Length: 57
Image (cartoon, rainbow, N blue to C red; front, side):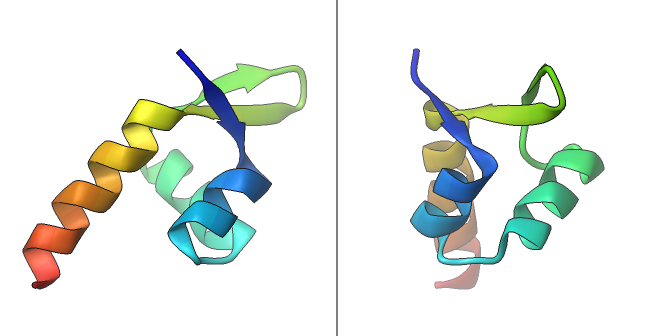
């Protein structure tokens, strides 16, 4: 399993890092704490994008 940094997730999702932090803290996007930073499983990002794509379109 591959983990992405908050910055990488923001780039993939085309949102700001603040938005990614908001999603992580609200529980919408699962993440693992590594030291002082978060790592988000790549699968979780893909799943979130897939769900939100079908909700809007």
